[in-house]
Length: 345
Image 1 (cartoon, rainbow, N blue to C red):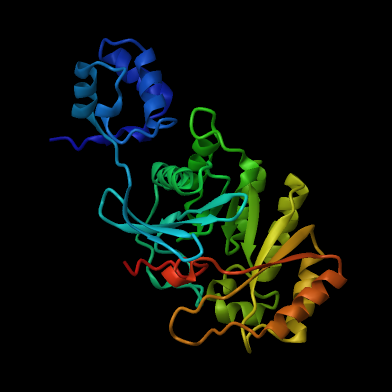
Image 2: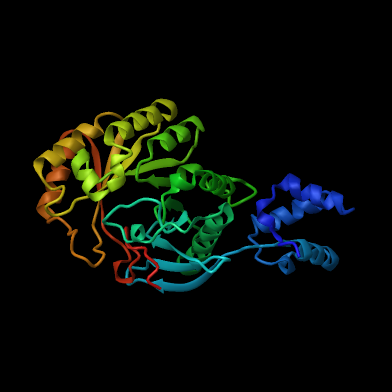
C-alpha cells in the first residue's frame, strides 16, 4: 500500500492539477489551499465548503501532518512554553514571549541542533532532523492562537531562536517564511521576522543573494577567535574573519543592519580586551548589540558575569556610538529562556 503524501508539500498549482486529473474543477485546488494555509485546517473534515465525496478522495490520497501542542507551561512572567509533538512523535519546543505592547513567537527549525555551542542546552541534543516548512508554520499558528487567547491580540513578531540552527535548514526555513508572509498564509510583514544564526558565512551570503526581507541576528558572544572557539567549537570551521566578510557582503547587498546577540560570562569574555574586540567588530557594518542575560543549564561551567562587567560593555559600546540593549531573561522558571530549550518534558 502506498504511503499517503503530506498534502502541504504540494503547491497550489499541483493541487489544481490533482483535481483536474480526478475529473474535478481546478478551483477546488484553490479552496483546499486556502483551508491548508490561511485557515490552518488540521483535518479534511474541517473543509466545510467541500463535498463529503471530495473530502473522502483527499483522505484516500493525502495526510495533513500537523503538529500538536503536547504540553504547555505558563511562566510567572506570562511567557508560554510549548512542547510540540511532530507527526513522527519527535518533540521540539516553541515559546510565546509577551510584553505590554506585543507578543513574540520564538520558533524551532530543527529537532536538536547541528552545532555545538557549549552554553546551550539544545546543542546537547544531537540533530535528529530538520523541520519541514509546514511544521515551522504550525508553530507560528499555535502561538498566534495563544496570543489571541491570553493577550487579546494577534502575534506581533517572530524570532528563529528556538531549537536548531536555521541556516542549516535554509530551504525549509525560507519556504516557511514565504508562507508566513504570504497574503495566502498569515500575511505577516517580513520586517517583523528575525532569523538568528550562530554564523554560517556561506549561508549568510546566500541570504543576501536571495534578497531576503527579514532581519538578521548573529549569536556572537566573542569577537576573539580563541575565546569564541572555546565556547562555540564550530568557530574553527567558520572563523570570525569569514563571518565578518559575510556580514559585510550582507550589508552591501541588503543595506540592512545586523543585531549581535552577546552573553557576558564571568571569567570567559568579561575582560577589557573582550570589550575592545567587540567594539572593533561592530565598526565594520551598521549594527546593534543585544546583551543577553545568561540562563544556567545546570553544570556551572558558565556563570552570568556581575553587573559591573555588563556596565563596562554598555559604557564602551555607547561611547563608540553603538546601539546596545540589555535583554533580561523571560520564562526562566519553566526553562523557556534563551539557551534552555532541551525537551526536558
